Length: 420
Ligand SMILES: *Cc1c(COP(=O)(O)O)cnc(C)c1O
Image (cartoon, rainbow, N blue to C red; front, side):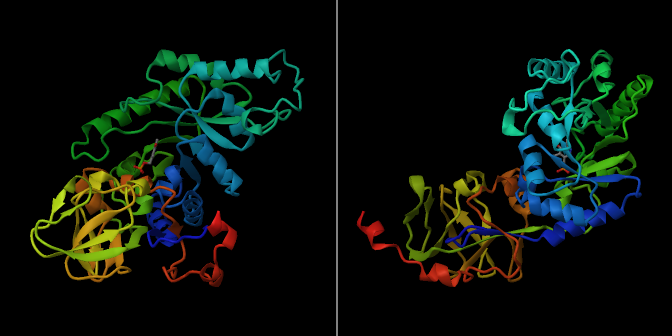
């Protein structure tokens, strides 16, 4: 981590992520593979650190949303199979194959476009000869297609009712089949995603599941036998383990978020504590106003604390009216949340430097991500995934705000810097 001069930070307990995934893993037969979903920087917890925790928990595959997320994991030395859960432009298929990254496909036209691109680059699929120009690098500079390079592994996404991505009709399936049977393509998986896995009424989940099973029959009749049929994210895996099929895709639950109020209590642990410290504390009088638009007016003698976190850190204005912990007690966020700061009404006199916990425990009090999220009307993972790069992620249990190195204390601006 580069130097940090502000007390705002997110402490991440990667052992909790590992334990959560191990607990989930143990609930399923060994034949059910575990995909740990580490998209969006591991739901804000750090992609590499979450991937390593998943590896330690025995995960079989990683799931990401973007090809760049998969490439980053490869660049950082993660060797586990990785599936990009949404289609990427066909021009990046060769990059994915070269890095052993599985792609999601939904239509024949994607393969057709890939083919046209390879022909135009003189790769396989043209006149059959491999006259590739060693200098004609594919986008992203990964180099030309190696002769008899690795196959492209794909998972076909089937839309059974979520309505975002995936093929829906038998006709679309039949158009994609010839491409799936190509020698340089391995159809490793078929999958779908549920729309209502958190609902008390399970009828639509069951309908989607039945549709998925009948669509997998299309594959069988076409002579395609993917090794991995999968449909469950966290909520459905916890609630309907009988629907696990060959693999479950676990995101939210890995980070300790119960994906539904109806999910069984598997003792999942939250993995992030979001901390800061007051940069100012002051006494104000009745009628004094606080923050932009004078949005808060003190009702009497009150103590107001200023916390150095704002919407540019991912602490959105929808968190207005929420609470933080100061001195082991709850303090209400008052006034508008700014780009860099927010203000709280303190339960007791405080001073600058006093520790603040926005998510986590302090003294006997606790504010869970779930509590803060439900007050704001969002899901808990939106809070952690929204934290920007301005909030350092700390993986050292003993790290404290006093952990400046000697060099950092000693650092002095050069005279000419000051004069300029
Ligand atoms: C993000 C994602 C998941 C993980 O969902 P959680 O509810 O966080 O476990 C699973 N499958 C797909 C297709 C996803 O995009």
